Amino acid sequence: RKASQGMKLGLYFAKSPRKKQAKWVTMSKEAFEIPANEAVSFSLETTLGPPFRVFSILPEARFYCSKIRLTAESGEESKRIFETMAWNPYWVGNFAPQAPIELKASTRLTMTFNYNNDERCSINEGKVPILVRSGTRLGDELCKMHVLIAPL
Image 1 (cartoon, rainbow, N blue to C red):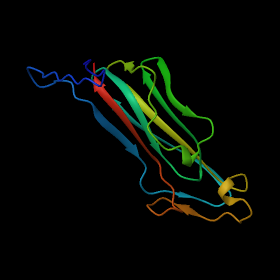
Image 2 (cartoon, rainbow, N blue to C red):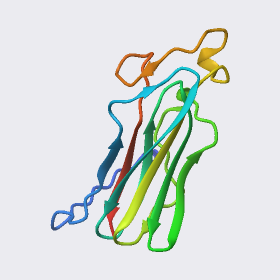
Image 3 (cartoon, one colour):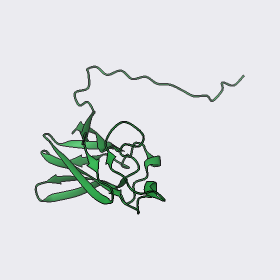
């Protein structure tokens, strides 16, 4: 009788703990308001010391966000890591590049979130725009980005 061609499992154990652990870097604006009939933009940045790789980007925003961008700057060099031309709150998830993005030491990550709170904003369709605040309720807005990195 022939053995079935089922799944095989192989386990490999490291001789020592990994020295280069991945970690999440989070940038967020916690308390903000978007006045009625206005568009606002928020930029937050952090500088990371050693060279590193970016594995994943997880932005958090809701219905008033129109565009999100993450850039990396090192010296005179600037690189766009992530950008949405039209943010859709229903497409939430982890965005991962095809291959990890390698960045130099002392690279500055800058996230920019653009918000619209006027008649062009789909959530305001048929309604008079009102003041929007940040918070945890569904009608509130968020401005947060998580970036998964690991040292080179």
